[in-house]
Structures are given as C-alpha cells and as structure tokens.
Image 1 (cartoon, rainbow, N blue to C red):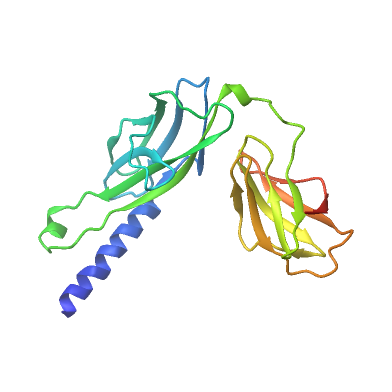
Image 2 (image 1 turned 90 degrees about the horizontal axis):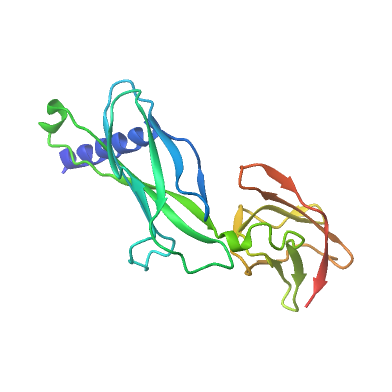
Length: 231
C-alpha cells in the first residue's frame, strides 16, 4: 500500500512539473472570420525532458460532443528539450452564430516521454489537459454596436445585474460601489447576457458604479462610471 502511494505522488509530481516546463504563447485565442488561420507557439523550456503534445479544439459546453469547426495542425507533436514549435488553428466548417461572438475550447494535452529507467520502475503516468478559450468573431459584427457598453441595474431582491448588450464577450475585472468591489473574481459575460451578484453595500441610491474590464490584448481598461438603474 505504501509503495502504491509513493508511485501515485511521484506520478503527479512528474505531471505538474511537465506542465511547468511548457510555455504557450498566449492565454486566449481570437479568431476572426476573415482569418485563414491563426498561429501560436508552444515551447519546451525543460533542458532534459522530451514531451508529446496533443492539441485539439472542442465545443465550450462539455456535453456537446459534436466535432468542433476548428482543427489544430499538426495535432500531435514531439517537443525536444528547449524546442519551440508553431501550431495553426484552422476553421474547417461554417459557424452558425453570425450575429454574435461564439466561444470554443483549445485543449492541449501534455505527456512526458519516459526513459527506460523510469519505465522499469512501473510508474503510473497521469496526463492532464490545459484548456484555453477560443473566441470567434464573425465579420457581420465587426465594428458593430461599438456605442453600446456594459450597464448596471438593481432589482427588488437587492441583486445587481451586469448587463452586456453587445454581440461580444466582455470580461469584467472590477465592479465597485461605495468603494467596495462586488466581484471576488474576474468574470466573462457572453453576448446579450447578464451576470448577477448580491449587493453587499448600503445606500446605493445615486451612487455610481466604477468598473474595469480586460480587453482582448490582456490590458485592463477603466470604464466610464455608470449610473445604477432600478428595475
């Protein structure tokens, strides 16, 4: 029993050490309809170990098992120590959402290549996926509704809604009323949807909402202070 426990711990150590050795050139991916492909780099920062990398695109919702309209080429590569490789994301099929952005998942699975000495020790290897968002912007909405922006409302149940009236995904970093940030994490609101949070401040009447968002370049943007409307 003790021997199995040691093997289990060592397996996880190898797996997470492996992920720390791999560097992806970006945290999110943005694909415009007019793009033929988008590129990203993957680098093995480890000076000793070699890795097998399997990459693919899936639908955002896990229950959707249908084939995604994107592929990654090549889908399977071998990365030697200190090697960098450029991968392509290519759209293969039409996407039905033409009036708003849609989101998919980029999956990158990493498996260390084990040498004979480690294999002989009968170590259990556990591979894990790194998952990144892939946003697709149809050309039909480029520069559309740029005059619209996030707005805030409060209802009788004392919940504040952060409303996104645009066809784009918007990532909110802070929502501050009375010097209190109501968000305990960064959130991303889909097109034409809202995010609801419990109001924990007092005397919100006539108070402005101060907020910040993160743009598609990872930059934090301070939004124009908003009036809190009542539903």
